[in-house]
Image 1 (cartoon, rainbow, N blue to C red):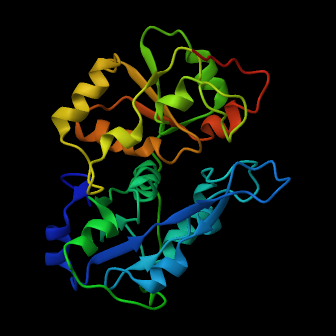
Image 2: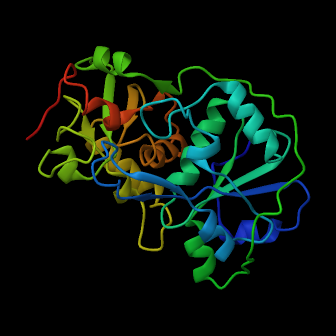
Amino acid sequence: MNQPTPLITTEQLAAQLGDPSLRLYDCTTYLEPAPPGSDMPYRAVPGDKAFEAGHIPGADFLDLQGEFSDASAQHFFMMPAVAQLEAAFGRHGLDASKTIVLYSIGTMMWSTRFWWMLRSLGVDARVLDGGLDKWKEEGRPIATGAPKGYPATTFKAAPRAGFFVDKNTVAARIGDPVTVIVNALGPQFHRGLEPSRYGRPGRIPGSVNVPAATLTTADKTLTALADAEAKFTAQGITRDKNVILYCGGGISATIDLLMLTQLGYDKLTLYDASMGEWARDPGLPIETD
């Protein structure tokens, strides 16, 4: 079912609670320090305990790394085979005939990641603007306990090409006049001014910086479209360009992707492994200020 917009407000969601066609999912993951001696940038901890402590009534919980990522990959959160995703989404009662709403805690990037994954599979979902934080701030109802889940479905993907690219494609596009490569990490990491937990400090050469954090407001909602448009155009990101987004692990960059999609940009892709791969590969070039 095509959705008119990738966002849904807390008010709109509240009006839909109890609708039998609604499929509502908490997508939260927490990044915790890696154990001493580990060469991983962090530990990925599912937000199931936070879910049990408080969630939007009727919601189910999705474990991004545990169920919806490639467990054999060297990096966290890598897109797995379509068959794995079909089985996992089917277990959680998700299919294209339902109204799918995604939310997360603290930052919208976990729900926007699932939104981008589902889009790549041919399914349009909606992301709760402001997530659970705004929902609770407004005093809306909260349930506790483990997820009850939805009846299982047969999820059939209709994959769309071009949603993800690898390091070879990114490397080949450096300096391409019709491509702009965009880093969604903070400016201190983009400029290489602070040590990176991903490896070598710095950025993909020639890339520009539109931090995901600058696209959200104090109440965790996304900034106005005109504000986002100004940030993108200031960095030379225009609708005629092929736009490659990256960040640390292919998560926060999906906030930029959602905003660009809302603005009508359609030549968009995500470098899935992002700096988690690029910064550790000495064969790939890196740039600092």
